[in-house]
Amino acid sequence: MKRGTELLGCEIAFMGGAMSWISERNLVSAISNNGGFGVIACGAMSPELLDTEISETRKRTDRPFGVNLITMHPDLMALIDVCGRHAVGHIVLAGGLPPPGAIERIKGTGAKLICFAPALALAKKLIRSGVDALVIEGMEAGGHIGPVSTSVLAQEILPEVAGEIPVFVAGGIGRGGAIAGYLEMGAAGVQLGTRFVCAHECIAHPNFKKAFIRASARDAIPSVQIDPRLPVIPVRALKNKEMEAFSAKQREVAALLDAGSIEMAEAQLQIEHYWAGALRRAVIDGDVESGSVMAGQSVGMVKQEQPVAEIIQELVDQAAAALERRAG
Image 1: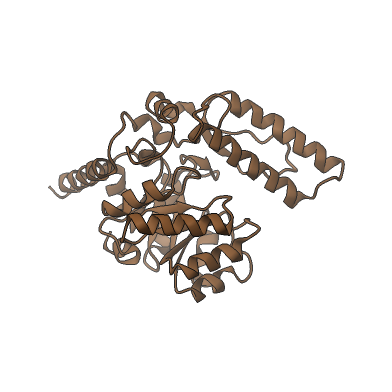
Image 2: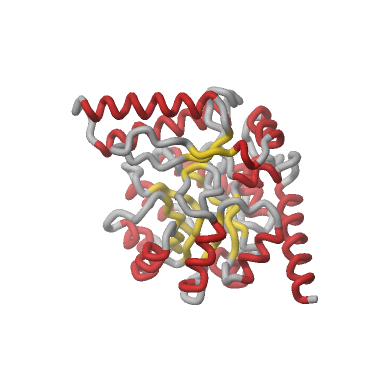
C-alpha cells in the first residue's frame, strides 16, 4: 500500500469512488480528513460548478483530494483548466480512452493522472501514454460497469503491470479481507464507493440510505441494452421502476436515431443526461422508486449508517487481521 499512499499523498490508500451527486464537498473532505483519498465526482457539472465544488472542498480539508472527470464531457478541456487553476493534485479520468490532447493538458497542470483500465491491452496503452496510476474496476461496482468481474481483472492485469505503475482495484469490495487479498496480488490500494454511501457525512437522502441498508447483493442489477446500435454502457443499480423506465428511454432515443433527427454522439449524451437526472431524483429528492439507486453488489455488506472514520477503521482492522492470519 506504500506506493498507493505515496502517489496519493494520504495515509491509507483508499480512494473514494466518484459517485455523481454523492461524492461532493462533504463526503470527499470527510474521506480525506480521515486518512483516505476523497474524489469529487464532476459528472455532468459545468466548469463553473466544478470551480465552486473544489473551492468548497478546500474549505473543509487541507488534505489531498482528486477530481474525477468523464472523457465524453463536452467541456472536458475547460474542466481540466479549472482543476489546473486550483492546483488539484490528482485528476481521475473515466469513460474510455482520453481524447487527443487531454493527457498533455492534464500533465501541463502538474497533476498526477489516474485512468480506468477495463482490459489489459488498454492498461498497457495508457501506461505508454504516460498515466501515473490505473484503476481496474470490475462489473460488481455500482453505476457504469464493464463486462468483467473484479477478481478476473485483478488476476489478468495486476501480474502484468503492477510492477510498472500503481494499480487500484475497485468493484464489489465490502470487507478488509478482500482488500488484503488484492494488496497481496500487487495492488497499491483500492477504490470504494458503495461502502461510503451510508456514511453520516454523505448528503444522500435518508430514503436512499435506507434502500442500501435493506438491499442484498442480488438486488443490485445491471441495466439491459435494448438496441444494439445504441452503445449504452450498462449501469448497476437496485431493482425498481426506474430500471424499466430506462428501457423505454432507450427505445425513444433509438427512434430519434432512426428518424435521423439526432447523431450518435447526441444520442449517447441524452442517455448520460437521463442517468444524471434519474440519479439526482433518488439521491437528492429521495425518490427511490422512479429515481436511479446506483449501487454495487457490496451493498449487501452495508448494514447501518456510520461515520466515515468508523468505516475506514473497520476496513483497515479487517485487512490487518487477514494479513496477520496469513503470516501466522
